[in-house]
Length: 340
Image (cartoon, rainbow, N blue to C red):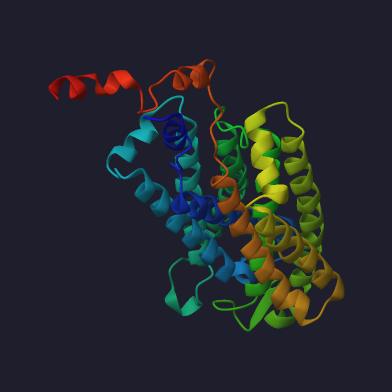
């Protein structure tokens, strides 16, 4: 086997599109649950009523994103029943991810059930303490899931382009940005009621109330997009300046190689600069176009990072493969010449 063939095997993409989608959906779902819980935690005491109904549809999408992401993760591992052993492991980092995903998914779904149309009668009014517990748990586990998606990749020391503390920061900023973008688009939609009773007596139109929170979310996402742009550029430049040749070569692919069109055109310009400009401009560009671009950029970022998994050779590995037969050595054909 030739040296080139060995390199191809070593650099094979063992994690492909399901993992990229899982990282995106996990970050999106976790970010949605975090923001929805945080807004309810902050504003509910101020207005005398839970505001979960404003983000009910977004919460459902967040829970669905976590569920689909979990399915993709198990599907990619190829042995769903063996995957249950992950919960029994004491040290595997993926165990904490599985636990956090499960808890966030369950408590987020129960929290969503409280905001279904009242005629469904799923819960008694006195059970609001359950809703408050679910709100707190989904908020904490949601942000933990967001952090986990970046920490998972950065823990692989052999993957030089991943092995940096900047990657969890980048993934966190991107996940929170996509979450705020989706919540802004879905705020006040079904199953939100037409009016929300504040303080037990004042009926406020849901449309007016949701517009207030949409403005907050646009402001938050503007800050997050700007921060993500800075972190992204720092991440790639830092990898380019790294002493590790593997990380440097991969950064060159992003800056002016095969990944450059996606990096500059897809991420930097369409995914970050344009949404930033649209948010500052306002109007339909801010309410519809910018969130769509932010979500697309979040997915593209995960795909680019996952497929930048070139492995750093271990000490002596290149020397070993350089000494392997190339396939045209004379001694390999000694028996053939004797037979003739």
